[in-house]
Length: 353
Ligand SMILES: O=C(O)CCC(=O)C(=O)O
Ligand SMILES: [Fe+2]
Image (cartoon, rainbow, N blue to C red; front, top):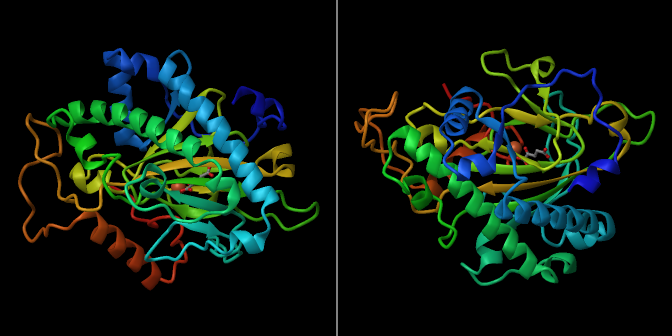
């Protein structure tokens, strides 16, 4: 991963950035109390933090897998003919897997988006369902892609175990809602925001959204990801860049964590802006592991076993039980009704309280 940072222009000093906490995966693995507390604070404040993966075998493994995924994304999105990619289109709202070309979504200002991506289903790659067909770069690399899911999932499960503790949940509760071996909408997404030709009108990559699932692990080298700080108006000028850090993943909570935690945890708005400074002159690749709940689990708030602020065992009056699959479909459909063409991405604008 480090070598990739040396290949691109440096992130400029003079753009507004958001100061995310940088947590050590090694310390979290060792049960460091303060690191764990910081993790929970981040989950409540803005639902975003950096995870430093250096210093442990498991961390190094996922960094290697991320490097492999970057290479795969480059090859797939640079070398495969568009007609070939378009043979595997994503088909919202039924399926969000497959290829999305540049300009299929709209930015806040009505301009076409500037991101293409290929979204691969965990079920397909892990073997929870019969394998689907893919462009050759993907089908040739199925064993390595499977390894990515296994390692990324293990890391997110460890983070989830810290959240269990802080929410006063029985150990393993959040892991049981996000299992690797049960059908879900979980995906690995390889993204490319192509550099715009010199002299073109600046154009954002991807409209502001929150992620539909439970937790996302994101790898960035070139800047462009922006997060909306909590409690500010949702306008473009309020977004702040996240500076990519070598050896680190960006972790963010998705929408499912909000109802499960009774609104205590936050799924935060983010977007992909033009890369800052000189970085705008290079193609921007990113890799996102978007973990979503198992299809059949309940989206009800979770029962606590100890007193946890804001988390109750009581169902609110009129609160209906709904499984993750129906909940996700409903949210995607709501986005369509609102004419917000964000389907390939996630739920829009429902910022957690
Ligand atoms: O490319 C990035 O940095 C962010 C992508 C993203 O937010 C998403 O795919 O949901
Ligand atoms: Fe996202």
